Structure formats: C-alpha cells, structure tokens
Image (cartoon, rainbow, N blue to C red):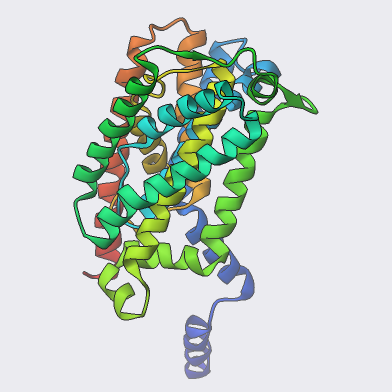
Length: 343
C-alpha cells in the first residue's frame, strides 16, 4: 500500500504542468521585465494623485500624453537601435534639423504635408547612410559616429537659420497637427500611439523584428545563420532617424516654431525611457511596450515637478539620476540572466 502511494506521489511530481500553469508561466515570463517600472509608475501616479489635486484631472492627463508624444517617437526609434546593440547620440540634432528643413520648405512654397513627408524620407536616408553604413558596414564605433553626426546635424541647423528660430504659426496645417484634436484626443497623441502600435507589430511579428533581436543577442551567430548584420543595423538607424524626422515635424508644429537648439538633451531623456522600459544596452532584449512605460514614467515625473512648482533645473538632475538607475538596473538584469543561464 505504501509502495503504491509513494509511486503515485512520485508520478505526480513528474507530471508536466497543466495548461493553466503553462499559461501563467508564459504570462510571467512575458511581463516580468515590466514589473519594476510598472510598480514605480503606479506608486508615482498614486502619490501625485493624492498630493496634487490637479494631477488626476482629464485635462492634465491628456496634457502629459501630448507633451511627451515627441519623446515617445524618439524613444521608439532609439529602441530599434538599442535592440541591435547600438546607440544613437544624434537623435536630438536630427529632430531639430528636421523641424528647420520643414519650415524652410514651407517658406519656399511647398505644401506642409509634402514638406513633412520629404523631410522624414530625407532623415531616414541620411541616418541610414551616415550612421547605419558607417557603423554597420564599416564597423566604426557607434559612439564616435553618432557623436559626429550629432554635431553635424546641430551645426547644419545653425548654418541654415544663422542661429535664429523660424516661425510656423501662420501655417494652418501645422497648427492643426500641433494643437488640433480628433474626438478630444490631440493629433500628436494619435500619431505617436499609431507609430508605437506599428513598431510593436514589426518587432514582434515580422522577420525583420526577429533579426533585430538576433543581431543584438549575438551578431556572429546571426551572421553565420545567414542574416546580413550590417544591413539590419543600417535599417535600424534609418528607422530611428526617420522617426526623429517625424518627431521634428510634430515638435515644430506643437511649438509653432523651429529652432536649431530644439530637443537639446533629448538623447539622454530618450535613453533613460528606453532603458527604464527594460531594453538592454547590450542589445537583444527589450520591447516597445516597455519603452512606452519608461516614457510615461519620465513624463509624469516632469509633470509632477511642474505642478508641484519645483524648479525646472531639478528636472535635469532627476533625469540624470533616472538614467544612472536605469543603467544599473540593466547591469543587474544581465548578471541575473547570466547566472540563470549558467554562463
């Protein structure tokens, strides 16, 4: 009797997990990277909702989404690059230059929407050729190359405008995109979330998305499996630059002006958002959903400090601190994954 019982108990211990347990395991594995940022985001929202009566109003929540739509676009573009194990310091410069080029084209009589499309395409080509080919094809350091293109784009904007801003207030189409709404939702938010959904679909359900993770995880193994590593990296930098071009168009429309100093420091804020969302600086791990959570976290911090009447100078201190914390979290995640894999 006891032998039969022990055999039954032993059989039970080796039975494969049921469908519910397997589903729960898959859900946990798919969401565990968001647990940290999710908890911090909920805690931050709860604290501000209690201490600041104006925070939880619909107007303020819409304002948070609207003012951080540009950051989300840049962070999504940067996520593509980080997934391949690279980085792009030129995102802020490309954003500023794109806004200036749109304003100049409009001054020349080009329709706003045509000018926007031309600038976005030009930005993607420029980013793909300068950053993508130099880094992907020639194997140059992404830090050195993008540092150079950052200076190049900023300098080009200064030369074109002679250091002055350009007004877009008189352009009706620009005003509609920058401050207009559809069913109460700002066009900026609609465009940014549409791009986010498209990016999620690309990274999760396409062959190119799988190649991004493969190149970032192990470039040599990806090459041996037949993937053109240099081309994947070049396309990632082109996508990032194109989204920065779109962000430049939207930012100049939102502010009704284009300036060569626009988006100064954007690369650091976007990097903090991406890393906070769980994307690894080493490449091969991360998601667009995490990037959204990271961008929301930084946007809510900025909004909370503003309505709390805290000096704007402290926002840079907080952003830098968050970036350092995000890098440390990424380091701990990599160490944990190495221990779990036994390497």
